[in-house]
Image (cartoon, rainbow, N blue to C red; front, top):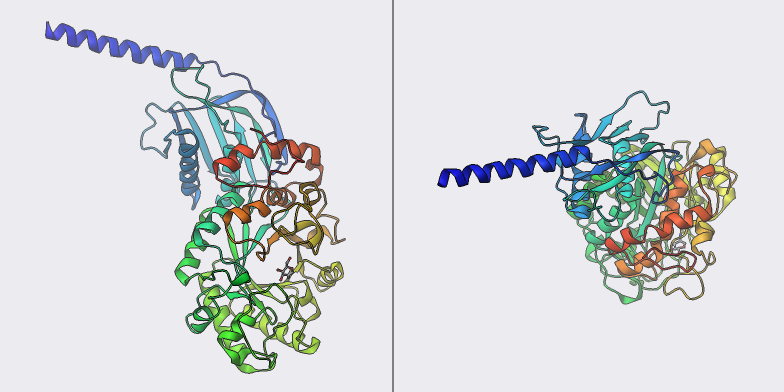
Length: 523
Ligand code: TNX
C-alpha cells in the first residue's frame, strides 16, 4: 500500500514537472517593440526585431574570463535580484535547468577604438553583450537594467517572467569624460551619501566623479603628514553647520566603490585661493597677512597661499603625494579659481610650480579656466566654468577642455524663482535649459579638443542627501546624456518622455528629485 502511494506521488511529480517543462518550452514569447522610451542616455543605434527575451528563474549570466568581466556579471545579478527577486547564477558550474542566457563577452574588433563601446543583441533565448572592455560591459549592463520592465508578466506561465524586448543596440559614448562634481567642502557629505550619488550616476553611464575636497569653509581629507588640516580645518562648514572629513580609509572606500562602477574619482585641492581652512590650520601657508579665523559664510576670493614661500610647495608636495597614492585615476585637480587676492604674477608662478608637482606624482593636472594664463603645457586640462576665452586660450595651448559652463551646467543654480535651494549668479536653470544646448558648439571649441562635460554641484545651500538630490535630479541625468549621446540623437521633446519614465527608478532608489512641471512624471 505504502509503495503504491509513493509510486503515485512520484508519477504525479514527474507529470507536473514535465507539464511545467513543456509549458516553458512552448512558451511563445510575446512580441514587444524595442524602443528608446526607457533609455538614458540615448544609444547610438537601436533596431527592433519584435520578439522578446524571457528573464526568469531559468536564466543564467555567463561572462568571458578577461579581467573585470566576471564582476560585471555579478553586479548585474545583484541588480536583477534587487528589482525582480530572481537569483540568477553567474558562470554556473553546470547549465542543467538553464534555458536562457545573458552572455557578457569581450570583443576586440570594434570599428571604434572606444573602450566603452558595446553591442547588445537581444534574442528569444539569449542576450549577447559584446564590449570593448569591462568598462564597456558595465555601460552595456546599464542598458539591460533599463530595459527590464518594472513588473513581471505572470500570465505567461505559472512563474514570473520579465520580458525584455528583442533587438540590437550599438552604442559608444561621444565624450571620454562624463562627470559630476560634488562640493564636500562647503557642506560635508558622508561616505554613504557619496556612494548613493555614485550609484545613480553610474546607472546613467557617467564615468567620473570630481570631489571638491577643500575650500575656505573646510578641509575634508586626512593628510597624515599635516594632521591639523582635518583637526582644525575639518571642523567648520557653511552656516555654522557640522563639518567632517574623510579619513584616508574613507576616501579609499569611495574610490573602490566607484571603481567597481567604472567611475573614476577626481580629487580637487583648490588653491592658491579658497584656502582659508588650510591656512587657519597652518598659518605659515597664509599669504594675506590678515588675522585668520574660521570662515562659515559664502563669499569667495579673500584667501590666498603665500605663493613665494618654499614651505608652501613642500606642503603641496606632501598633499599631492598622499592623495595621489590613494587615487588610481589619472587626474589631479588643483582648483585655481577666483584667486582674487593673489597677484597675477604670483598666480602664474604658483600654477607653474604646482603643475610640476602634480606631474612628478604621475597625475594629469586639471584646473579651473583661470589656469590657462599660467605657463601650463598641453598635458594639462582646462575646466571651462566662466570664460569662453579662457577655454579657447587653453585650446591654443594644446589643452583638452572639460565643459562646465555656469549658465548651463551648474547644478547649484536654482530651477526658477520658487526653488527651495540653490544660488542664482549664473541665472535660473530649469530642466529644459540645462538639457537644451550643444557641448559640441557651445564654446566654439573644436570637437577633438573637448575631453567631455561635467556638472558641478556646489554645496553652499544644501546640507544633506535629499537637498543634494533636489538640485542634482533630474538635471544631472541630462548632463549624462549630453556627454554620451551624439547631437542627432538628442531632442528635448523625446528626452522629456524618456526622463518621465525614470521616475519609478528614482523613487525606488529613494532619490527625492525635483518634480519639475516641465515633465509628465510617470506614476
Ligand atoms: C563659483 S565655479 C565657484 C565656487 C562657488 C560657485 C557657486 C568655481 C570654479 N568657483 O567657489 O561655490 O561659484 O555657484
